[in-house]
Image 1 (cartoon, protein in one colour):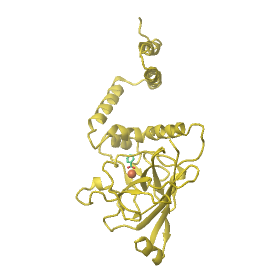
Image 2: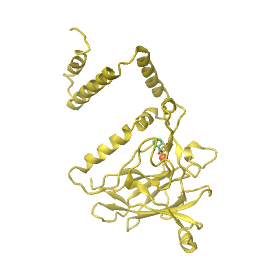
Image 3: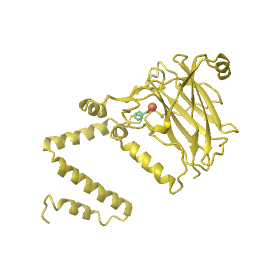
Image 4: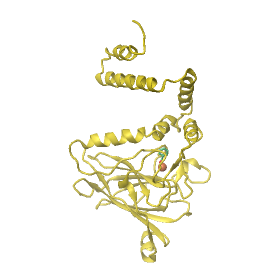
Length: 291
Ligand code: BEZ
Ligand code: FE
């Protein structure tokens, strides 16, 4: 065996030829080819290579039970959204019916959402602009799904999740686990969320800084919706007039998920929803595919 720039790739691919699991063999072969091509294209100096190894080492060292810097790295490189979107396309198979687009889960779905009843508020602070979100969970054929689970979580009007401000926000603020009624409906009141920065106190923050990329995500509300016999969906709705809609740090914006949060100045409707006028009103129907 004589190692050369030309022999390197086939030699390594061949070393995996005996891998019993064919999918693992395929993945390792592809990884080898792409990684070697990347190195051939970039021709890193030894210092650059060592910097890369150190960056990935520090990315791993930043991870613990509540912090996943590798997922954050995948997020800012657009990989999380690519994996998410490819898998949603594959789950659709040849049945092309439109279902609700999926997006990344994000790192802040880390506590169980408190169970709440139809129409409850998920806001436990009373600051910020009131907002009501209504919607239905439907099957692809339009049938309303009663008893569907709708888990929601969001940052507050200052752009912080409850788990980021344990002293200042009660646990469960901005979160709720709802069950749809007999017509498949859910409704909750809240405050209009603010845009916010992803965590920048680790290697991913360094990467954003070095490349002069901002760390912000446009204002959004997260949802996971599920029902027995249907494929669950993890998604967000985005506030239509939010900053950073065109430059989300994690590339999670899909057009179909941008919603109008309409200003409503109607005291009677506000009273019906249990909020003060004026408030903002957003609608979001979630469509699931049978599994
Ligand atoms: C989030 O929306 O909570 C989020 C998603 C990806 C990275 C950081 C935050
Ligand atoms: Fe978020």
